Image (cartoon, rainbow, N blue to C red; front, side):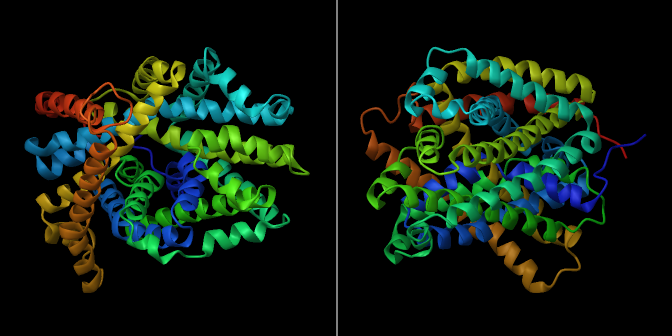
Length: 481
């Protein structure tokens, strides 16, 4: 019957937005905006979007469309045996995120059910969160439920599963999020929140932290460097426009993040004094979403309805992202001749198994989020290495021969100089800051947040891949049209 392909351009676009838009848009982006000077961060984020995220998305989409295979095979085809471990690292880094991300999807589903039944407001939110995450088996149950449902979608295939899901959930997501934003901006004193978002503290643009956060948010939020866009593009038609879809994915994801900020920050400022609203934004992603926001919703006139819509949007965004990660893992196995059914079962089984520690211990989840979230910077850099080693001119001629010369020059300049420079600056700043923050134990690998735990886990994976990937190349099975 041949390989499946997305039936329509709209289906492909919505699938790309589904993989890009996740919890980072809704719970992380508004918090980072609030902590990094509002408008100043937005400026830095937009610049990072065009200088980091969109170029990497463009590399992914064009390579996926051209070769029609997964990330491991693309690196094998373009660079051969010596560099193929980089493609495998990208896939395993994303799967490392997948193993704990399903736990977060479970959190979202749990809180959506609490909001729907009204139970969210019957107990203090801090007590509710502690009861749910500490000493309870519920996170494991919801982890299993979310992984099972997402695996079922991937098992149905590209057309009946992924495309059909995204055609339903992504319009629903945007409608709900826009409704939340309009409601939030109609609240008394919401103007203070809008003023905070768009007023610019220009001094923040001189802060390294602002730029590091902007690049990190760009990498995490848009899906750039995850290898998933490449996997989805492998199921696109040759007529699809790589440049258009790359810009649509990056800008659509950023729009969702901005709308989420318009829903959350004005709500905080409408209910709380400015100082208290600011302090809440520093409470971390889970603290803001599952502890502070339910307290805020409780004080609104239509608080339960707002909570239902909010956790519905969060669940939609989280679920479509999890589906895309499982598809990446399944695609990786299918490139070695494993059927879709067996590959999905394999990913489901090991996903449940490896994700269980994160479901039962939130400190383990936080550690994995730290290690593999930072690993995305390596993954994005590896895509730049891919094009640089393959030959920038050769790549441009093969994929963008009809594009204007200024596009080729600009893209080539970013791949050769800008992306590597961004990577070096971000990694160097992270290394220096981590050592300064924890001078005595920055190297200790059992710490949840430090250099040592990242280097240990990255090192184990890279060494294993350097040993194994030359053997894996011999067993590649190409998906045929």
